Length: 90
Image: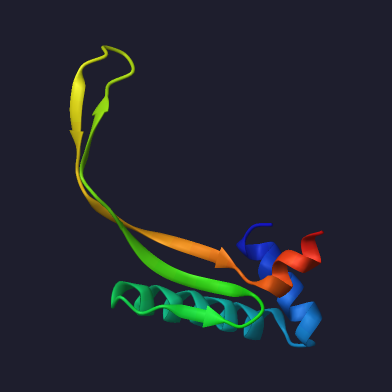
């Protein structure tokens, strides 16, 4: 499902227009992005939680040459599915 399909599905499920749905989806993405940038954790009970994890610097290999390369440390987004979401997938 891409963003357009998500907007259509939210509009249908909530009984609102596609324009209102687009505003809601965009607002959700902006709020989650801002919260994660400031280091906050977002927990949606039953659905899951978003958090920021730090990956340490490490040494890797260039697959083409086999030469050792340094991979710098970085932050990444983690999502952990909640119990209700996992139960719905079984």
